[in-house]
Length: 183
Image (cartoon, rainbow, N blue to C red; front, side, top):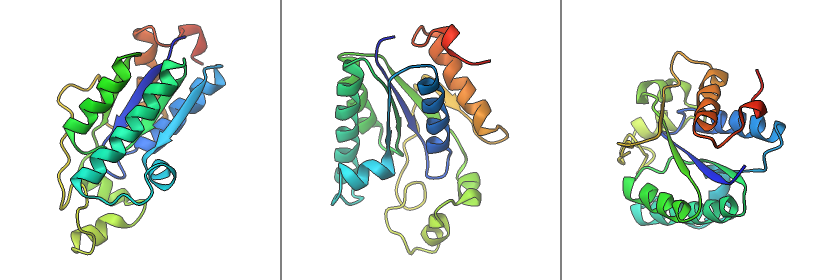
């Protein structure tokens, strides 16, 4: 298998990290070399000190895209889960990867109402109350992908079902051997 970048984007609480973890675990279980780049973890280790201005968010996504492209170029599968709210920054990440490997954008299309209901970090309630400035989807924009390879609706679907859709895409596009996917 050659490398690829699987980029999950969507609002906070959409299910990106959950689905990314399931996909990465399945790939690793099948012997694929995988690196996960989760937005929260990357911000702690690679982009510490960046704020949430558009410029800082774009720089964060460019850094993730650069790292992902290098790992994938070396033959690894890279599973990114990052809000990545701006289309221009996602296009930059795509162009960095596509110099070497396939880039698959997965739009985890979960409604803001469902994300707020899940509210895994308690952030939506604070954002709706005006306590968090520049909160994506509330007081800061999220530019939904217009040409994502996969549009993944998580509402009414288990995380395992969502991950299976992503894995099926990888098989259908010859990025994963069908024999490598468990039944």
